[in-house]
Image (cartoon, rainbow, N blue to C red):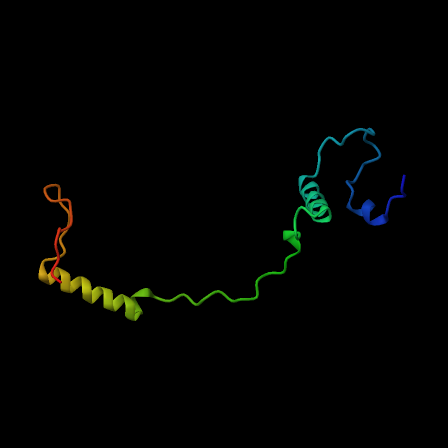
Length: 104
């Protein structure tokens, strides 16, 4: 049997000498998950430990008001043109479908 490494001792579960030598009453789930992830990486099942990945360096995009964009204005103008020509109408119980033909 190989001697235990001190790093293994630090990562092992803390045992209180006042408890019996069997399984602990309360298992530390967070520490167990951390040890499991380390074992998965060591065994080659996972490529990396997600907790050891550095944070993303990209800054999030600045929030913009979509109503200020050129695309929004173009679509709004197209919708107004369709309303003025009678191509667009609100669906109703009597006529729930869009028109079958549009002008080219």
